[in-house]
Amino acid sequence: MDLSLPLNLVNLQQPLEMPVSELLTGDYHFVIPSYQRGYRWESSTGPGDQKVRQVDDLLNDLTDFVDKNVGIKTNYYLQPLMVKPRYDNNGRLVWDVLDGQQRLTTMLLLLKCLNEKLNQGLLPLYTIEYANRPDIDFGKITYAQSSPGYDYPLPNENLDSFFVRKAKDKIKDWYDNQVSNSMQRQANLNDALFCADNSRVPIFNPDLRALFIWYNASPLNPSNPSNSTSVNLVDDIAIFNRLNGGKISLANSELLKALFLLCVKVDKKNGGTCIIDEETLVRRWDEMERKFQDNEFWNAISPKTRTYENRLDFLFDFIRESDPNSSTDNSYRYFYKDMKCLLTKHNSNQLEKEWEVVTRHFDILCKWHENTTLHNYIGFLIDCGKSPAGILKDIKANKGKNADSTVINLVKGQVKTNDDVFALRYDRNEKLIRRILLLFNVEVSEKHKERFSFHQYRERKYDIEHVNSQTENAIVKPQERLDWVKEQALSALDDDKSTMTPSSADYNELDKLIQDGTTLYEQGEGMKQNNFDVYRQKVENYYAPEYKRFDKHWIGNLTLLNSSINREYKNALFPIKLRTIKGRDQEGEYIPPCTRYLFLKYYSDIQGNPSSFNNKRWNEEDQIDYANAIYNTLKKFLS
Image (cartoon, rainbow, N blue to C red):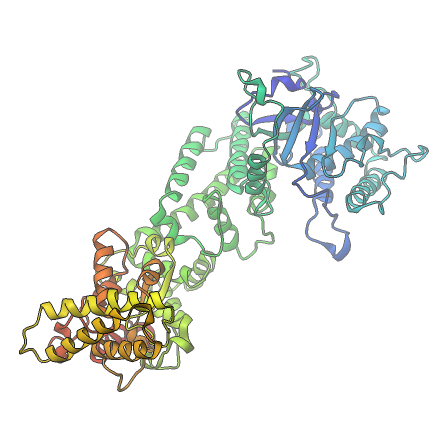
């Protein structure tokens, strides 16, 4: 296929290797959409010696490539280019650049320099138009000092002009100092960038090729040409945000898959003995992607503080961050620096080692999930904010210990406190209490040899719930007061009365509360606030007698609960909460195990606590039993 003809690519659905030379026919026109930032790359000698070094990287890599591969047939791979074809208002075929505009622009500046110096400027180049900066005309840029336009663009015109001019000056210095005095380097650069590909001109067969990895984001549909001139900004911006949200080009995993496949291809083409073939790699890659779509796996091993459009990207971040010698924050760069040599010269052993790193770390994550103990404790650590890579480093650092004991020590560090567990209070120790309550649920699952569902836990927002509600939450709206009297007080009291006989100990007190509530409710919205507050206090004291040793903020009165349920029954009495939780549990709503056990009085001492048989009240004795259960369950972590 002749790649120099843009029409041959408009329906393309698979990535391809696009030689730079095939863009140099004057027929390729690129548009940088307005939603993208301008040209902003820096050189390593820029202000503050910034880490973003794309201009220098391109020049140094290209120089190194042509110097090391004299007489060798090989390719230099540029970063991927994602484009979308359309026809502009003048009927001209243009390509909107969704990703890769910085490298495409830098390459154009480089091509203009080399075209003038090596080819007298005779070859037509591709064009670039920035939609948000139409006044920048790349056609005016020249490297000929005798030209009246040599100083274009002026760096003080705008920010984009400043960076374009800076890159231009850097390229000129590179040519003057490193290329102008080397005929061999000039010839190799000319071959790599300008010599027509043999798919277009069979008599040409250059040894060196510079290639973009070309992705067509939205092929034109020849059967529906009416849409070929439209610009769907919503879709395009969504794609752009997906590609650039992490300050990387494409998803790292997509780039790395292409990188590994290219290296395997080079290895096989040059007679390598790598045990990995393309089919095996693709199959294994698909297996990893499917595993990462398992929500129970994903939510147990992935960090809470990051979002991944492509979950497999996390695997490569995990690998990079687990390496104490890593000096980059980009996982593609991390692999590329060691693998770029495999694109030009095969080394089967090195390729196998790079692939082994990927599969070994994937297997580590799988083991963490499949081993119940590691799943439970590592999932807890990650929920507390510990990075997966940090956990792996700690495990590796304790070579004399097994992973379980190392992880248990890390868990201890997350709930360490100088206070007695009975002294912890919601208003002083909210973060620590949340961790202890989560660990309580995790440890109960561990004792049952079950994996705690971090998927269910993380998919919902959980609040710390006061089992006996905080009376200080005033109810002041007339309708809300009426609702509380009817739906909370009278509903619960009537249920209680239906299970009693007139001889029951609490019968008279309960009957009086029902009569008072009925009288109050009949007052309607004219109910006085003071009368309501007094009645509410009596009802709450009936279901939760006044505290003697603790108040409602201590850990014995706290549990974890889905925030939607918590909001549903705010200010509810214990029996109403119990009824709600039972109903939601029957509907399939996830209730943390220890929260379910609490409301079922699972922790109350049936011999020493008379309240254990009363599922209508959550007394101080119940709370003490519950707090003791927390401490006894977590003793190995708290002591």
